[in-house]
Image (cartoon, rainbow, N blue to C red; front, side, top):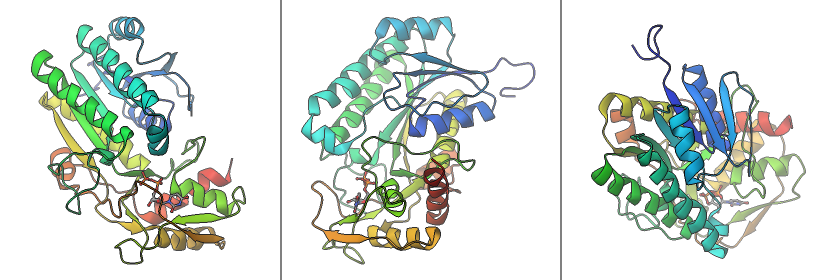
Amino acid sequence: MMNGKDTPKRKILVTGGAGYIGSHTVKELVKRGYDVTVLDNLSNGNMISLDGVKYIEGDIGDYDKVNKLLQFEEIDAVINFAALAYVGESVSDPRKYYDNNVVKGKAFLDAVVDSGVKKIVFSSSCATYGIPEKIPISEDERQWPVNPYGWTKLMFEQMMKDYDEAYGLRYISLRYFNAAGADADGSIGEMHDPETHVIPILLQNVLGIRKKFFVFGTDYDTRDGSCIRDYVHVTDLADAHIKAIEYLFENEKSDFFNLGTGEGITVLELIGAVEKITGRKLNVSLEDRRSGDPNALVADNTKAKIVLSWNPVHSSIENIIRTAWNWHSRK
Ligand code: UDP
């Protein structure tokens, strides 16, 4: 039995484990009995102190460090969260994104295969699909990104695919839709600087940190004219990573999955939900579209449900906003 009394704990290296989704996943891995080592450059850190988690400060692009670490710690599998993730910044400063996510990503993959580790779970994104032809988006939708961030994620997916065929690296690529919410106990949550994501921005507006909330576009071809997104709770994403790791240990087979709820919600509907849950009125201003925003992104999550037995049970919009509010209002 996995992680039973007589079997050694499985050892997982989590890169970017101090980040938003990484820290929630580290917490979940520890809860389920894994031995966790975090490699993080602490650029956007949300470090949590957990018994049994080793934090190593370092960069995924440092081939020698990663190679030695994987061998010294006798790592069984890696989860790679370390990446830059601002779509807008990737447009204005693409070299930074190709450097971090692709060039350093390749050094990391090389260290993984050279050290004999054969299993990797990767944070990919619905941004790899670009403007989808069909909603909800299934995994066989054409991948054609519309910004450098999406291209860096797609390039990493391609490298894993080629390394699988050539070197036997088995991977699971998890394509997140809109990650949101915070841990139920309020100890970790979403924290970006600068903040560009809609739910933290809405809550900063409630808290008076921002004077106005700007709705980016009200003339989209959607039910109320504002953009539709599929918000998925970070605890459900963390759970998907555990299921992906288990799948790799059990099946030794590569695959990729969309992680979303299958339900889309508009920006105007989000405002209503935030007002209801916080009991406060927002100061809203209707603006022009933000460039590069597709009108609707909703996941077809059938494959993750069937193959990984994953279910986004924490992802009602009420629970997402309630846990995010709990985290933002206690800071
Ligand atoms: N959005 C908005 N106002 C804001 C920030 C975001 O109206 O201050 C909208 C944005 O146009 C998009 C949705 O909220 O339709 C989600 O944006 P976010 O940046 O959170 O995630 P994305 O879908 O771009 O990854």
